[in-house]
Structures are given as C-alpha cells and as structure tokens.
Amino acid sequence: MENTQYATSIPEIDAAVDHLCSPRSLGSVWLQSAQSSRMPQTAVLREIMQRLRAILFPGYFGSSVTSGSVKYHIAANLDSVYHLLADQIRRGFTFLHAIQGDEQDAQETADRANACTINLIQEIPKIRDLLALDAQAAYEGDPAASSPAETIFCYPSLYAMVHHRIAHVLYENKVPLIPRMIQEMAHSHTGIDIHPGASIGSHFFIDHGTGVVIGETSIIGDHCRLYQGVTLGALSFPKNADGTLVKGFARHPILGNKVTVYAGATILGRIHIGDKCVIGGNVWVTEDIPEGSHVVQGKHIQ
Image (cartoon, rainbow, N blue to C red; front, side, top):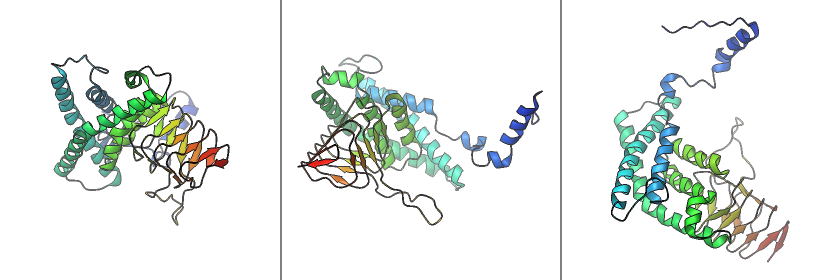
C-alpha cells in the first residue's frame, strides 16, 4: 500500500515538502506516471545511435568486420534498429498525444511509427554518402588531420553530423521529441548545438566545434566550413497577441556554397550570405552579404 504521509523531524523540511507537493507548485512541472511511462527512453536511443554508427562506418565502431561478415553485420544491426526505433517513435507519438490530451488510435500510431522508421532506413545510404563527404571535407580542411579515417574516428564535427543527419530525417517526418533527444546527445558530447531542423549540404565541416550554434531554420549550402563559437541565430522573435512567441517561421540565416565563417562570428536573422563569402572572426552580421565578399571586424570588403 502506498504511503501518502511523510514527515521528518525537521520542520523546515516538512514545510518545503508541503510547498513542493502543493497543486500550485506541481501544476506545470509534474509528469504523472501514466504519461511518463510512455516517454521515449534515452538509453535505448543511445543504443540505436551506436548501432547506426556501426552501420554507417563498419569496423570503426562496434565489432570488427571482414568482407565476409559485413553484410551480416549491417543486416543484424539494421534489423535491431528497426524494431528499437519503431518502438521509440511510437512512444514519442503516444507521449505527445497524452500531454495534449488527444485521443489516439493505437494501431494508427504504431503504423505511423513504422512508416517513419522505414523512411529513415531508406535514407541511410544517402546519409552515409553525405557523411563520407563530410569526413573528406574535414581532412581537406584541417592540416592537422592525417586522413579521413582520423576524422571519422576522432573529430567532434563528424560525431555531431552523424547525429544531425539522422535527426534531420526524423524531424522532416514530424517525429516528436526523438530528433531533439538524438541531437542533444551530440550537443552534450561535443559542445556543438545543431537544431534537427537545420538543413545542411554536403562537404560540411566544423573545425574544433565547441560553442557552435545552428538554429532550426538555418540553411547551409555545400562545401561550407564553420569554426568554434559561431552562431547562426535569430535576430528577433515576434509575439502573438497573448505575448507568446510566434513559432514555425523562417528566422535563421541562409549560407550559400563554399562559405567560411571564422571563430566567434555571429550571423543573425533570415539573411543571405552569398557563395564563396568569408566571414571573419568575432564579427556581427545582420544583413545580406553579396557573393564573394569578405567581412572582417565589421568591414565589408568585396
């Protein structure tokens, strides 16, 4: 039988407990068991990402792989990913329905989760191709890199991009919670914060990486390079009549192809940075920059 009464010998603790258990205090922060039991599970998502990394880069992560075993290795991991991820996506949809108070059809939710999972699996060959190009860009863009293999195994940029390219596909399929959870694993591990909604082209490299922030509606072209501390953010946040933020509009920068942004630069708002631009370190950019321009310490040099 659950004990609903609890008292200590210290009045101050009892008073704090009473306050923390009051409806006023609990109202906006309590996730009751009926809801929390439906949440996606971080530990399972970590296993899924480990298996996906082993699929994307056989031999680098997980068990050793030979030419004779690679097909079994990929098939076994992909089968596990399918069953684990479909369940986690189902949990994500179920949790969303629960907190919104919506009615749900269990079979419809499961079918939708399976469809989203299959869609991701179909995209994995494309994701691997993009990540291989990211690894090559990291090798070509960093004189300290000895090979593309080193960037795959060691570089935070590649770790972050594995998570982002997977999370982005799930985000595009409107999967709740899970894309952000996957992305936050990479954020906590690398210090690189990329919203799952950001669209990033091929041959992308973040050198060093710590403190990079890329907002939800950012668009980054091919062959772009960012350094540590770069922010691609929003300049302002319009509000509804009730004071809440307006959501779902494009508010982050667009970078063209072959753009380089050096350490500490801040680029804000729905502005266009043209192809082959170079944005110098520690500058603040809030207006369009024409193709081929250099911006250094607030000076625009074409």
